[in-house]
Image (cartoon, rainbow, N blue to C red; front, side):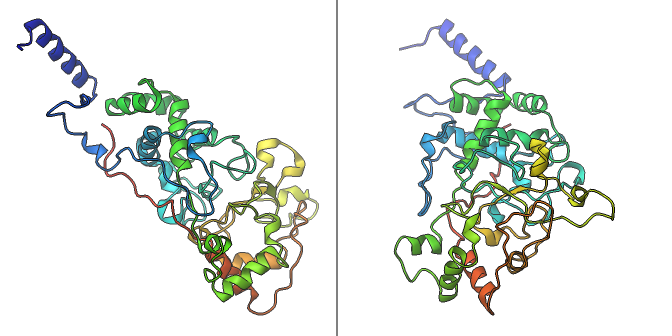
Amino acid sequence: MTRSPRLALLALAALCTSCASGERPRPTPGAKNAPEPAPWEQSNPVRPLPVPPLGVAADLADLEFRATPAKVRLGRWLFYDPRLSADGTVSCATCHEPAHAFSEERPVSTGIRGQQGRRKAPPILNAAWPVFPAFFWDGRAGSLVEQAKGPMANPVEMGNTHQGVVLTLRAVGGYRPYFGEAFGDERVDIDRVAEALAAYEATRLSGGSAFDRFDAGDERALSPAAARGRDLFFGRARCSACHLGPNFTDGRFHDLGVGWRPPPPGRPLEEGYADAGRFEATGRPADRGLFKTPTLRDVSRHAPYMHDGSQATLGEVVAFYQRRGEASPHLDPEMARTDFRPGEIDDLVAFLLALDGTGFADAPPRLFPR
């Protein structure tokens, strides 16, 4: 049956409007000769939500912000896209690197124009299921979505504004169809950007480690040294007082004395803190020098360690705990000295290495929407 001239003109007009706006024509389900997917889709197709690995009690479909496959796909582009920064050079992945279990190998993060921050990027593995809803080293964000907004507007990190991020993405016509698929319409705003980022971050799961296999009943999963280290970790060494639960963190804030040095005579003791930590979020004097307990999942990939990257190796970290940290004014009472016998530091390190898992691996998409 021949299409009428009027219908043909309407179809042509619709196609021209779509092209002018930067949108790609959407294929009609079941249509023959449907247009090829946009080239950037080939390295970032819609995938099913991942199955949580052994040891991770997570339900991605039950999150408050609904981590759908379309939303995760959009968030994956945004996570790796440096155009979200003010000068187009820094993305979320610049500091949360997949190769380092979504932390980084630098002592502190580097933002736009080479600016150095004060803290190392914490890992985001299994971050969507915290014991307490507090994110960043100082807990200034109350949700994973709120956390996703922070670095974009931080002048030292991505150096942008939320309005600037939105204007940039609105100008990229190729992004609009994916906002439509993820949220039901093509509106771009900062809340949707942050929600898509959080959805992708929620899929960075770590489990299936040697410890998880041992905990599930495989007595041969741990080496003899790691088994001895496990007994120490949950016993005399008292590591599990703060590093507990499936993610090996209590989600709370503690002062270990990291970065504290006695101030000059006559000066207030609080001036000895190089970084005020939790105090900057709460303003409570008792929170000065407190930092959130990080997860130990895949901890071998996070070196250097502590919020300031001041400990180069896991052996140094364990030795730091053995000597009870630094005697800061608010030193946590859990930092009780533990006298290790010869070889026990190595056993604890062997156990920490047994927390390396799978499920989080990824690499940046090769292309991004245009």
